[in-house]
Amino acid sequence: MDWLDRISILVIVVLIAGSVVLIGSHKGEAVPERNIQQMTGGADGPATNVEIENNVRVIKNFIETNNLEKAGALTQELIQKYPYEGGPRMMMGDIYMRRQEPLKAVPEYKEAVDLNPDYLDKKTLLFQGKKIKVAVTEALAEIEKRARLNLNAGSINSDKKNVYYLQRKIAGSCS
Image (cartoon, rainbow, N blue to C red):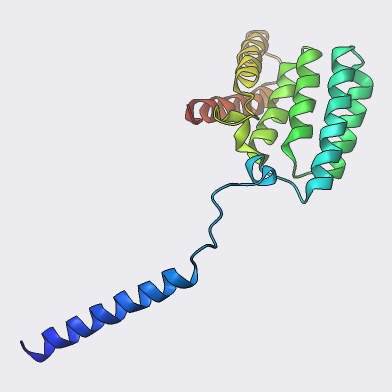
């Protein structure tokens, strides 16, 4: 055994000892369960989540009773107050879909999915993929109709970008 073999063995022993010390010092720190805030892609704190959930419940009631003006106003207020939450954007898309304006709903859904990708993950409680897919299909039909009528080619291109983006996100979502 020459000096290179002895140095190699010494380095291996030091690495193993260091690994054992490192693992031993972090034992018990890992928590296997995630809290609700982490599972929902959470906001700043539980108070924020409760406020958003309460407002979303009110907005859903407005949508179900076809009071879309109040629902839209409350949703815009939530979007201004919580710009980094996907829930209000998703609700705004729902309002536009109820008004039968899929081309306005698609950018809202796009923003909601960008803020919280769990909306397209079938394994989460937040899954909204079927609803978004319907909006994309209706928006594509509207774009084709506008293209045949030669209406505002500039907005058609930006609408197509949003629709194709959502199609790619839906196709690439977890299954």
